[in-house]
Length: 212
Image 1 (cartoon, rainbow, N blue to C red):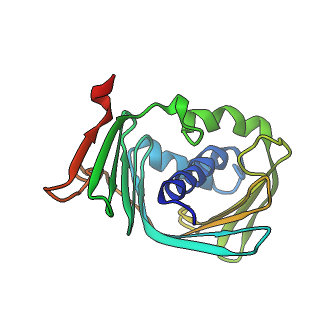
Image 2: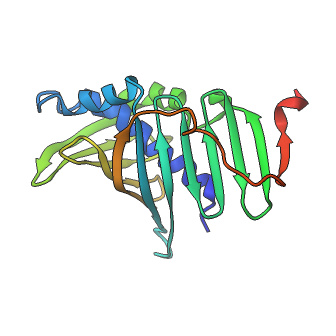
């Protein structure tokens, strides 16, 4: 079974790939993708329900999960039935529903394979735009990489007419398929409480920052 933490990382990675790739492609089409990145740089938050599915290339077994996501320029929050995660760029907070426990730690992008800083260093050189077009009611972009160490070998991005993410489909190096679909996605103004982690009063608090 795919862990909630993996779902959080992959869903966030998909959006990072989208933000990095978007402004560099289809620049001539009404500045659609430059407008997308501008929304994040101006402090707007992309909010959506999401459905996450993985299809195993060997067994063809499918696992799925649903949740809610809020993504900003440097921060994000993801909630599923089992776990809630909030990252503000400096601190990571994770609430485990089953254990009723909160783990607080210093967020170190250099130690996270899915961090924006790690991905930004490789996207331009490893990914090639194979397709970029308007298809009836959405923008479609296909990116591929021949780098054997790339996290994904192929990524397909789908954007609405309003430049909001609809779906991201990726294929990893062993041909597993990962699909994230965003429902009722929209950009909203950031609020102070948006990246607050909610948890019960009696939850166990484990502050990893105190160990350093």
